[in-house]
Image 1 (cartoon, rainbow, N blue to C red):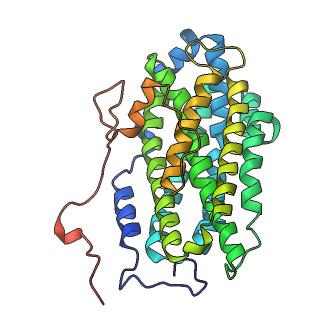
Image 2: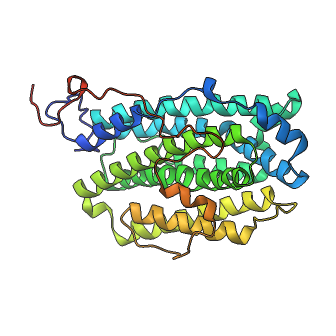
Length: 335
């Protein structure tokens, strides 16, 4: 079973083909930072951004600087440790590669957007020193620390602790914090600003969507094998967690929009976050909590694949992979 402490290393017979298919899907989206061009962004940062938009960008860069390192940290210490599926571990291995690519991307973003060395260092230390970003990090650490000492998921309470951590990072960190930041980027893209950041975000957006899909598939498998764990009390706690995440993100919003940005407001961001939160709750098999609509027409793209790059003809359904049957893997073969 997927949370068993008896380590399974056998891919035949394949017990979780859905995870292997997710791994194969993730391999179709391989890109490198060499393909990102920030040259136009320099001009926009110098000549086109308002002081209010510049403040928003500084806060986004500071959040991005360490965010994916936190996700990777939890991925290695918790997800990979406890999910007993070799197929899912293959997917998690690719996800770790993605996270390191995102870390490199945001390193380049900081280097390109912040020329002053002291200001760069401040960006990397933001998770400790900027209150609105520290709150996000503290939220992550709270759920990471709660299961750091779990070597075995040998009781229902320990299994629930793991489920809460899994849901925290799928629904709240990648599913809400990142999607909130993506909304700011796409708002600026909709104004024709920062095409380099927009291009990187398109590819990262696709990666994160797959990561969330993988985590939700893991939750679904756990629910199927351990249905008694998903009681009304767990659902209530998870909805409180999601509400806490929305409030943490709204504190960041108040900071990022502190000087006012025409076309954005905390009210609209709250509606958007509630809309996304309901999507996450539905993916988890829970009922919606907010019934809010998406107030951002420019974010309708989030539900469409492929995403077409706003600034160039290239499509962000950027896929590399083998199509021949020789290189395909069947799900039902025995050794």
